[in-house]
Structures are given as C-alpha cells and as structure tokens.
Length: 81
Image (cartoon, rainbow, N blue to C red):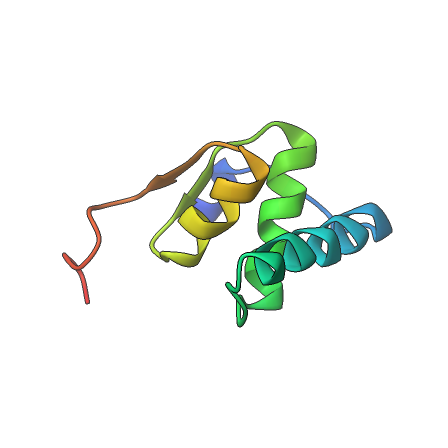
C-alpha cells in the first residue's frame, strides 16, 4: 500500500465512461472485441489527464493503437506470468 501512495488518485468521471464506450466502438470497428471495461476506463482517464499508462496487459497496446496515447509495459510481456 505504501508504494501506491506515491501515485495521484484519478477519480472516474462520466466523461471517462463516455470515452471508454467510444474507444470500445473504435476497437469493435477493427474487430477487436472483448476488451475489459476497467481497462477502457483506465485508458480513458489516463488519456484525459495526459498520463502514460503503465501496464502488464496486451489490451492496452490495442487501446493505444486507436487512441494514440502513450502506454508502457512495466516489464516485457511474458516475463512475470
């Protein structure tokens, strides 16, 4: 828990929900269905606040491909599974 205190809390807003649905539609148009709603909300909040989304989930690469937002794997894919 101490490590999490180093990060700012970003509250989810209605605009994040609307953007998440928009991202979901963009992905569906590419036949990339099944992205998790929490991932879409995290991406939407990060995008609005100009944050780099740190992750260990390939879904964020697919999301970033349609939003153009920065995201970064915390460690290379497959190294901590």
